[in-house]
Length: 164
Image (cartoon, rainbow, N blue to C red; front, top):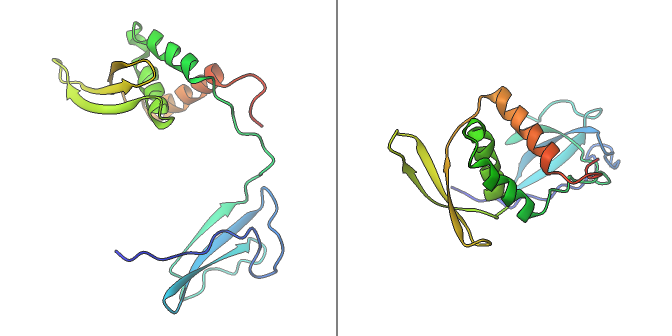
């Protein structure tokens, strides 16, 4: 595999030299230039399609840098909620999704995977903060249920007044 150094996003339209605005659609294209790869960002209004020699291109939307990001509850609150879900078998999928969030936030660490007596996959998660290990059944929710669980977790674990 060959690694290329690609220039960063400039937030400017390469065709008009105009600054891209929050919420504006633009296209990015990668072009060969000798032994380098150049990135050009072009506003949707100026986009005429990818050049013939394009290595790749994609469509994106300019982020709103003034929007506030959601503020999650403190890790201890999230861990307490996670622990409370252990005694409710009807919410195993919620517990699993929350475990993934806690792993992503580096509150929990995946130590091992095992199979229980009934053949279900179990993740063994380590919590350095509490010096505990948790066993969480891998319960993959259906896509519609996953969106519902994500909304439920956001409502429960995002601090009031946070977000955009």
